[in-house]
Image (cartoon, rainbow, N blue to C red; front, top):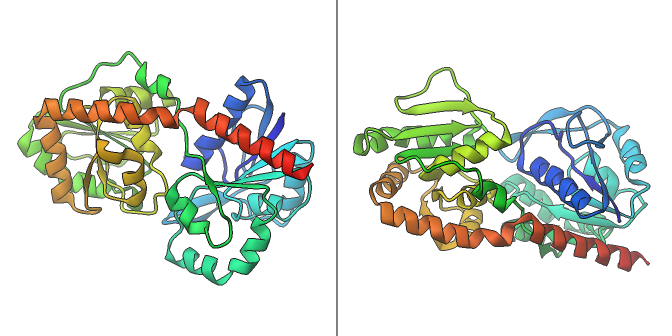
Amino acid sequence: MRVAVVCPYDLAAPGGVQDQVAGLVERLRAAGHEAWAVAPGEGGPEGTRHVGRTLAVPANRSRAPISLSPRTPARVRAAVDDADVVHVHEPLMPAVSLGVLRSGGPPLVGTFHADPGAVVRGVYRGAAPVLRRLASRLAVVTAVSETARRAVARFAPARIVPNAVDVAAFGSTGASRVPGRVAFVGRDEPRKGLDVLLAAWPAVRAAHPGAELHVVGAARSAAPDGVVLLGRVPEADKRRELAEASVFAAPNLGGESFGIVLIEAMAAGAAVVASDLDAFRAVAGGAASLVAPGDAGALGEAIAALLADGDRAAAASSAGSALVAQYDWDRVAAAYLAAYRDAVAAAS
């Protein structure tokens, strides 16, 4: 099967959608299919068909590197025209994904990722008839979580196909758990909650003077005692950091539709403390210690409690390891292949 996997964001920029697109292309190729990514910017796996420059625009309490050029839709149509099926991520995002949705061509599968903010949800409600017409061009609609599915339910009934990780890769780094090590992985933007974690950290250090926090994805000019700011690191280094951590902290404040970092941490065997968000609760089940978003005191107490109780941390690690198999790439890629076959059959 020839599959074009469309991403509205620059694949060179960090982001969950970008990671899923690149991983899916890799898995489809490994299974013997001819697959390529279509995206703006310059990054991506070998063979990516690039369709224009990007501009960073505010989106979901972050900044999204998308293309807004009026030439982009025509370039996208040319990049997907020889596919048997086109898999469009975030179908309503301009101009790459929306350009595919508004054109004819091969059958389309769409995947919705985001938990949109209140303003976008209002737009969805007000524009439901128009969005329903656009979404009707998708032969199969998927969402990565119940949170993402609910956001688009007014105009696009969706089947859930979750985000994926290479579970075996996170569990086979050869790294040893470091007592007292806490890890954070995320971009340095307010909704990821790093400032909340740093506010909680003095209480953790007071209870465990030898504790150390490794921050992956953020680089600042100064760090509190016991905090190591690693900035962006290669994927192998991220996996090793998670495998060495006794506790993984996800202090996110909102805007999350899934929680891929929780899956990665559980696959690596870390005990998880996370904000009590709908998406995180759905992903982590009873395996994580959940605290109110933004509550630095509760976050610090939960981290300190796990560092103090090895049996409890080990139980949380075992529970997380049992959960992650459903998010492995083999299962998720198989679910997408089923969606592609359904889309092709519907177009026949």
